[in-house]
Amino acid sequence: MNKMKNKKLFSKIGTYIIFILFAFITVLPFLWMVSTAFKYEQDVFRFPIEWIPRRVRWENFTDVFEKIPYTTYYGNSLKLAVIITVFTVLTSVLAAYAFSKLRFRGRNKLFLAYLATLMVPWQVIMIPQFMIITKMNLANSHWALILTQSFSPFGVFLLRQYFLGIPNEYSEAAKIDGCSHLKICFKIIVPMAKPGIMTLIIFTFMGTWNDYLAPLIFLNSDNLRTLQLGLKYFQAEHSTSFALLMAGTLLALIPVVLVYIVAQKQIIKGLANAGGIKG
Image (tube, rainbow, N blue to C red; front, side, top):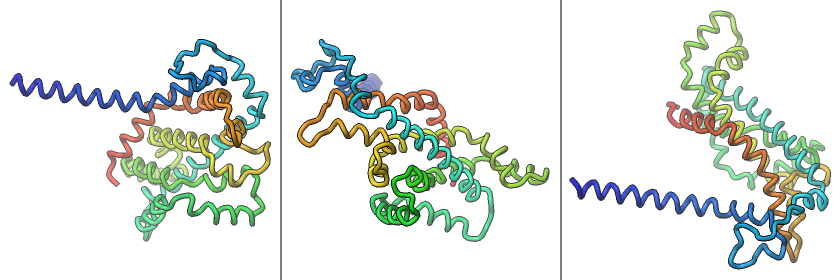
């Protein structure tokens, strides 16, 4: 018995050590970014690494706003992240309700066909998308990003799985009372699916906020560019201002971190329900 207990104990200790090691490897780049944001440029690659800078340069954060129109880029990113998130949630809720609560011929086949688009890399369709947007005269505008990113197969799948776990008796009782499908969807189903919707909101907001390639393709004017494109200005052909780049990146993380902290419980609950519900 003692040998079995010792084996289990050593096994747990080994597991915790592995987890701690992977956690440390994951957090290490973030710690380096935070440390670099407060350093002088000449101290960035000093070896051994000064994790706590002996000389702190607070001016890095003010220089970020002086070197580039940081406020404009920040506002553009926030605007796009909010609008695309709202549209994505709206379209995903409506599609998920149709695929989970409405009965029509070919429903499951249509859902599988829509879900299959998840297997198509965005790099494959970005050129056709750009050609369509150009013909619509929407190139070099925020509408190009809004229209191409407001439909999410993943969001539909996530919410559909969640909606399937809500008993149909609620919908049937509402129909008897004379409710339309829109009322049933937004007044009955949506309030009962808040964790799943919050999960979609966080994923969409983070994905849009951190997007680099799509704004690079669709946006040419400097006053329309997003924060991720703006940070690229600190990287020149032969040199990079790492201190300013990390300071700007640290400021860019604030909305994402705040949103995640506020909604982390909803994310875990939403994913747990989506993974455990029958499809």
